[in-house]
Image 1 (cartoon, rainbow over the protein chains, first blue to last red):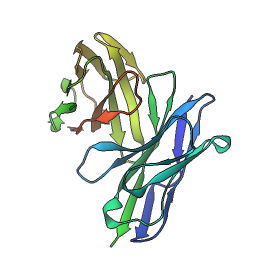
Image 2: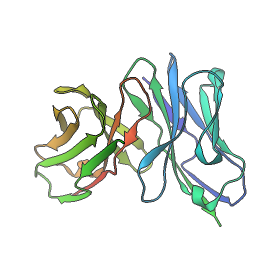
Image 3: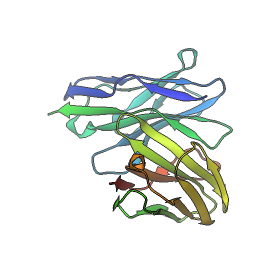
Image 4: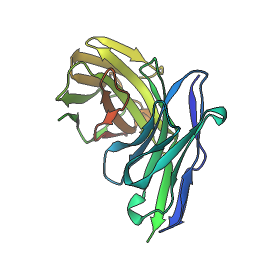
Length: 113
Length: 112
């Protein structure tokens, strides 16, 4: 069965620190990969996605993620976080032929001003 | 543009009472529709999805059911709520040939 594992449930950083959130998935076939973000009081929304091509994808607000197929990983990165990046981040996997998306447990990021 | 609505935003219900949560999508046709439950530390659990009117796929055995009486309407129901049904319920849609999902504002359900 498909599964998604996010390594950290809570992360606390100071502004300007670098961020890396880990995500590993378990699935034998080709997948689409996503990072979603939920800011306090807002809807869950797409941060970035990978379908094919360049494994390094760039999203909104300076975020990027790298797909490493051999490691079944899709880690999220940002060189310098801001206070406004405080949110909950979800990694998600969808098989290319199906309709279902499997989400990780989420990582709550708190950025200290 | 497309929008997705959920109501109510918050609901407090006694154990054993029925439930009906509604989700509607505007500005698109033939969407795939989804119900998720979000629990702290457990991410989003897919409950049901639908690829068309009257077509419902259930992902987990539970006390809940879903229906899609119209193309852009998705309803989550229960005949008798349990304490364990408490949680945050999210509806989402996506276009059939695109993979990004768009989420609604959610309904927070508390069963007492």
